[in-house]
Length: 237
Image (cartoon, rainbow, N blue to C red; front, side, top):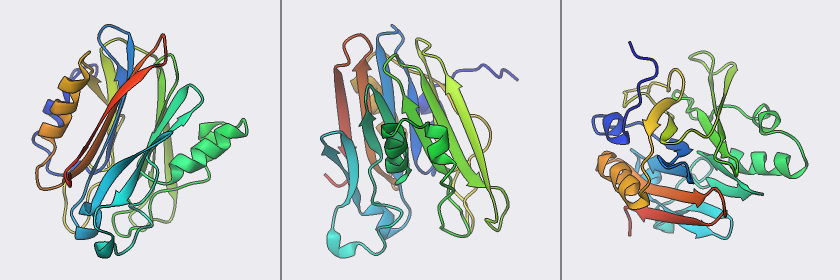
């Protein structure tokens, strides 16, 4: 077993019907761009009824058809927010918790210790989070149920240097499941990060399951200047 194997996103997504929501953070092969990506998937009508909308400091989710919205509390949130020279990316409203803690000089770890997995019994969907610094280095975290009944929360934190061509992929589920969807296991997965934003966006979007994919966000930030370009794809568009 090669624990340092680096896969493409195609390798990790093409045969997985339902990885759920996913975060990718890393640095391009030439070492010049910090890369952040986030995608959402859904199986229910409520989950699938969403789009990404650009905000001045990131993106938020919004109902594609407001008349079909049933319960917004786990599906409407601000997944990407800028924080100084950094970028916060999460799968829920813990984005705002992290932003608020950083704004008052506290750590992102302290922020996440106030939160736990989602209250969607029996799945207890993990809260996954990432934060990328201006130099391209990044941290990732997953908060998940410590037992099948959701009686306690296990918190895992990871920290990575900016390594050209390397990124890490963290997602909520191992794969699809019924009645319970299995929670992500192990460390974030090592992935290749290309220099071309359009190539990487296409690789991600084309390899997400056609029935379950909803929206995708990708941002490439120049580490030297802080200037960025980004892509947003919505299935309902």
